[in-house]
Image (cartoon, rainbow over all chains, first blue to last red; front, side, top):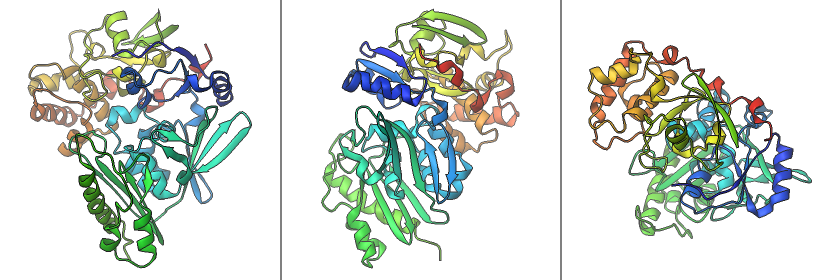
Length: 275
Length: 176
């Protein structure tokens, strides 16, 4: 399978990428690791006229502590997140989730910025970022702005990023010592999750779901039940409240709702603080 | 667009269409057909090669993305008639049946041992998650990788791969 023809432009800096996006608008797509975009282009489900390669902006590949947070550059590969000591210490959920994406080859190429900007409800990292209360920095022609992960995923494969913005950084509040869990249910090795759950318990609970709607989403009903004193099992029963999960060859919507309740219960139990 | 890559130690420059996939570049332009195209959807791993010392699926990378990179294919593992330790382990343990997945399996296994020189059996199985054997001949493949690890032949020295630090240099990123 061969992608449709496109103009290839290579950005030498974030500013240049923004300039190219401004010039080409909706006709252009950014290429980072390419592990979300290229498969779509090969299937001709995406056919951007211009591909702007930002994969060489090595100044956007970093993981560092900044006060109460760990900041991760958009071009940081899944593999680097998986093995990061800083993340392992302060945001272990993110490191673990990165290690569950696809397979080693995919993790060598895929980037956190690409995964978030793609906004796939079946992706693992968006759910982790939601559960962790992450925020996302984007740079556009008029400067940079910060978007809460909660406000970032706006529709199926759609995000709050404007056509002329580049996602540059993800900020993760430290969750040092917090309980956490990631439950990924699939049938075959390396598959997308049929349903996944990311949970963090750090006084309050952050719970997010993979593949339970048209966007990556928070399990709000679960979080509210826990906040008002419900036990784990009781709260988990609300995992699918108000949600419309997709139906496909892997699972009916009802099966997904069932999985969500079971996996949220397991996640809450595993993430229970060990006091 | 002109790209310059080093494939198995030899530097090559070619004018390629931006949409050309790395696997087609290696097979059809460079002429190295050891790398197979299996599923063509980044699932099966038959097209696994090393870019900058790390395993990647060459069906899911554009040749232009590899501009400036150091690439190793299955043809680059053996030193003349001397098989790479991983190839030897696959042969000694009969780690193949039809052989179609083998080049990708070997490349993935070499990369796995570079990152994880002494894996358990479970870690080998997980580390080869990205490679499917259509004969389901996993048993001997896993045995071969464990044997290569036991022999202390991580493959890192033999391939001279630079590892994570050897990714495409940022200096290669000048606008074209």
